[in-house]
Picture 1 (tube, protein in one colour):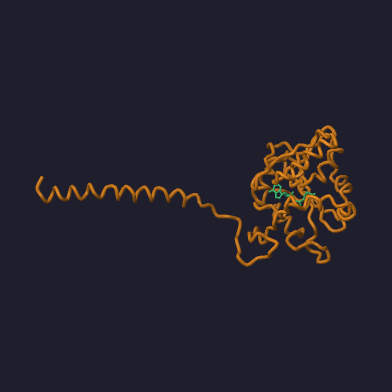
Picture 2: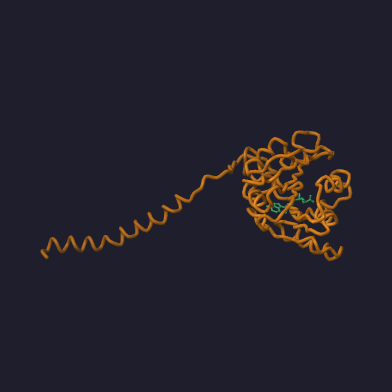
Length: 253
Ligand SMILES: C[S@@+](CC[C@H](N)C(=O)[O-])C[C@H]1O[C@@H](n2cnc3c(N)ncnc32)[C@H](O)[C@@H]1O
């Protein structure tokens, strides 16, 4: 090897780690760029203080009601305001039904439903362990064994596939931080032909004394449920301040 060739050879050797590093860098960034999925959500800095600044299909998502509000869910006036027994009646349940009460809170609806589905069960799903602890305590006090507390995640209801006859969502859908993912998991858990009953304060009515982001219009609710493959069946208007909206999971999807 001549002096010049030897120097070129040594230069190339010294540069190898640099090229290796560059390749490693490129290799590391490429998959990340490829996996960056387009999101269905939009974040805006300028938003309602009652919301999380995240928007889905034009609607801002509301803050989750903290477990500190558990007592409010059990307020006696709720009987007149939200007519829970009429809600359960209108759900038209069979004694053997498996019902998922998604966003169950203190189990205000779960325990009422458990009396109707005597040979079935209620899966009381919530994201806050403190709410599930209230449900467990009440189960013991009331000696109820067909209510099962289920801890969900932000993007998943954590329910078995094709196992649920009816999913009930009372005053909760508007606060799901990942509504699309959450509803896709609820749909997966429904049996073919299974129903979703969604109850929300009426967003069209300015006289309903609830914060804007904690209400929903029927048009918005239907649009968002159609986006996850649910078919609207009916909207019932027997409640003083809320919509009672029924959807179905098609038998064939
Ligand atoms: C306003 S409370 C309504 C509780 C109950 N449905 C009722 O009507 O009494 C909303 C509940 O939904 C729960 N929640 C919010 N996001 C959730 C999610 N992604 N999965 C399950 N529960 C959720 C909250 O923890 C809270 O207990």
